[in-house]
Amino acid sequence: MTTAFGSVWGGGDVNGCNPGITTTVTSTTALTQELLNTWFHIAVVKAGNTISIYVNGNMEGTKVVDVPFTDTHGGNLVFGHNALEGAFLDGRLDEIEIFNRALSDLEILAIYEAVSNGKCK
Image (cartoon, rainbow, N blue to C red; front, side):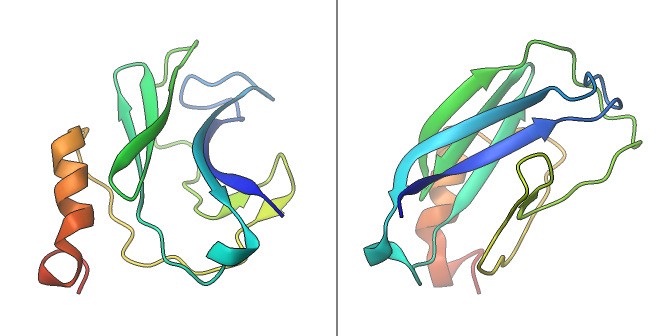
């Protein structure tokens, strides 16, 4: 089994998305049998019309969104599930945070590096 982390945006007809169209940003980290039961720090940032995914403080994927994305509070926010692919997270999520602005590369790295001394207590 080898898969990468991914972030899917859109797929509905709200928030500027077109029905049935998604934007997937995929990391380069391969999840292998040896890495099962390993915690990963995952961050996803939407800045303007660009979505980026970070794994353990490093940006691993980025994509420009083709359609305007404006949050109208008309859709559900879901973690660990991709209904269009029929995929579900077989693991645990911990310390999910949502910020009111896009974090910088350095801020994401600092959160990852803080481990038990900072954010992740």
